[in-house]
Image (cartoon, rainbow, N blue to C red):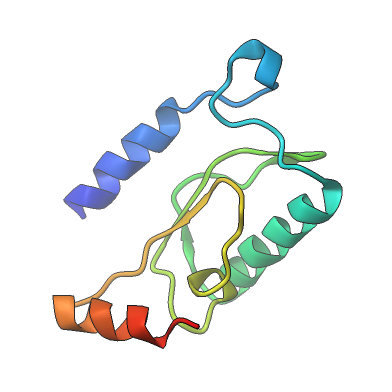
Length: 105
């Protein structure tokens, strides 16, 4: 829980906008990339992930999304979003974390 709070605090400090404005989070490369990211986020929401930040999108610009309680049945647990989405999977031991990581293709 303490780590999640620290990560959340950092995410909330990120600036979002256009590259010319020196923002840290800028638009993804294409509409199809933004759509793919939205599919992953929607899947996580439908399957019960906890949203620690609100999902917000304007065109190709997606605000940082911090997802907690991500489970292996969620696409975001396995598929790289290539965007500002950070899934947190809670495990009970280092062994469980390694087992999960080793299942990745």
